[in-house]
Length: 499
Figure 1 (tube, rainbow, N blue to C red):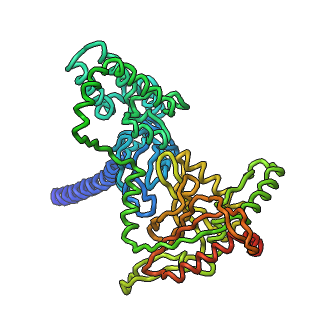
Figure 2: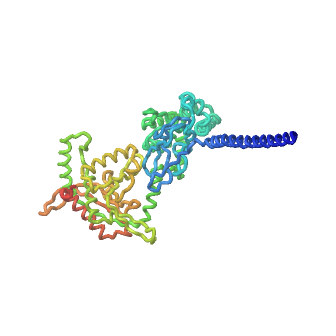
Figure 3: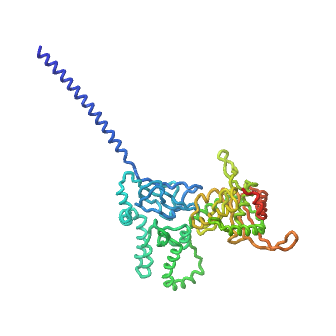
């Protein structure tokens, strides 16, 4: 009896022990599972910190931009909104700023190359978990020039000097070749050569690699004087060593035509594309002669008043162009078709005419880098003095090569004042997305008869209009041109339209 009781008790104790061990195993698995999740979570935190920066769409259908200059180098520390590079597209130079704070890892293009819109042009390591001392070590000035940045710059900075050096040293090591090879090794950085588009255009005309010039301007900027000085040094030894070869080659070249290939500048390439598209528009020309005598007298009186006021920041002299621009705007109110553009309807696939409320008049300007057409916005809401001030601003920006895309976009009609250079008649080419353009010839003094048949002196100028014959007929163009002529000949009429 007692033995049976002990056997039952031992079986109960065994079952309880097995149950206890099973509960322990379940608890251990739950605990291990609870600690396993953080391991999986930590493994997903390792994300890529190198961010490729894409070249944003700058508008106006531009698909590529030329890298004018870099403001950064590989391994350089950049902050958010700090400038990365300067690009030029459709005659406008724009500074591209950084979207991230970090360290520059790679430059996809060199200065002078064309960057594609929507494609990466620089890689930035945003340094998500980097320590401050590591960042300081990366951006220290001494290691960046000779240490850490050397492996990254070997492709872009070290190979070009090797090729030039091998050519000069491999062919001959004479005294004449020595001085020429030294400037190429002094500075060959594609990122340190800073210059305005006008200076770069001059270097291309003289067939000079601007990266070989030691800039003396602010922050190492290359100036025009640096280019002329470089040309003098380059050509001075050549003049003493090449007289005999030049004299012997002149007779041989007289009976043979020679051709030299010159690459188009970025401004010329944009002009080539724009004018090629413009020539698909069927043009017709309308010319008229305008009497400037009253305008000459009015301008003389207004300039006298402006010179006496002498307010700082205001223009002290008005040219004839602001009056003409205002006269064109007043005519557009009566003939809005000249302010429209031709487009295709997306639903019907038929051509339509899109009228525009504002008069944004483009002004063709001659600059050191080529022809540009900045736009005076909303001329209808401006007076003559406001138009003159905007013209002065745009001309200063154009000469410096600092016109923004906003300054160059949105034009509805164009005025080309070729007369300040020369020429009486011209046949201007209509700008794309416009239907008319006005060309102004040179003002000249002629003898003429007045109302009493007396010979008097008159100041006349020829206006040459080109219009899109698909939507503008000759009669409409003649009536609109007559409105402009009457306003210019009687400029006091503008007083009636002051706002």
